[in-house]
Image (cartoon, rainbow, N blue to C red; front, side, top):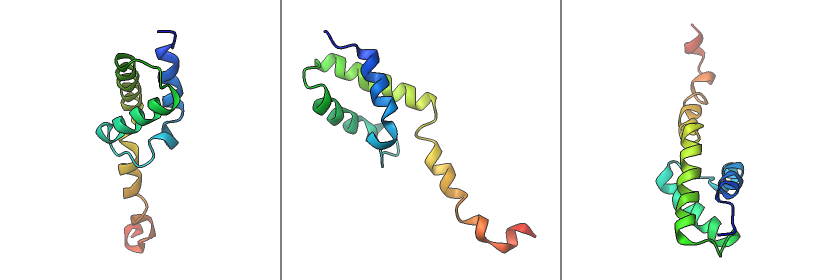
Length: 86
């Protein structure tokens, strides 16, 4: 229990843009986070791994991490249509 769980949560959240690239929702992000934990913190007990995953997902959901890509895609296409300006 020498690992600071909050520090691991913060580290994963800081790397979320690259770490969770392609994850559209928390269900897709969870296995990516578990893989990251296995690679970076292999000695972390399973109970603490689950705390880290839950903490990261809660933090990212609060920040709107999973909601942003869907809304930004909608704005790419219509900007080029001339009829929208009329």
